Length: 269
Image (cartoon, rainbow, N blue to C red; front, side):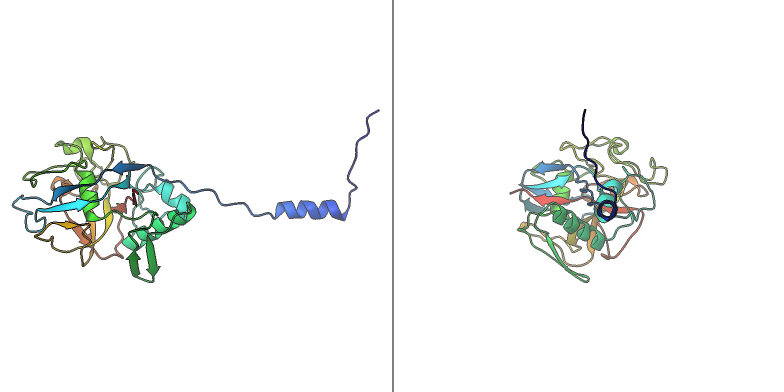
């Protein structure tokens, strides 16, 4: 005959059940974007197009190798890291929108901390400084963004014509005023560029690290700018000419709109 041991019903069992009921759930590991390696190089940044030449003064620029996210940060990834979703066009696979430059750098630090990386930014109120040696996530520089949008091609001469990230046909590679239906769209809805990067032209504007300033006349490495923060790539509501890889837009770092998002970068040791 089998004998079964039974715990006596009583205070011990009740206390154990209460303890189990109140054990806090561990937070889920946040999602990380897929990162693509970009080799370093020297290229002609800017263009010679007459209507934009003053703002996009062509100059040689050098960037080190780095990683950049395959897509703009989606609402699913943002929510998994930050716990809430500010977007006005809800959808897990749509880019997060209505985020300021400050929000973007805070996201970078939060994801870095989750992954036990050294945060790239020291943030005190509205003062943000960047540690370029940190291995954590960060915003791409304006030069890195343009280099990646061009396909990391060491261009030997300045651009003299309209050029989109991924080809000459804007409808194949980007969402803009003529094809977006006046809203952002899920990432990867259009063709990628030569590096496998999606939505570098259109969908939502992308914050980069730099402050806005006139381009220099001499070659320089890793430029950072000096005034308002730069936005790149055009958005779902912009005309086709603003999808150009050389086009520069800017706004105050606290600016938020349903046309604005970002993608992230990391150092490639």
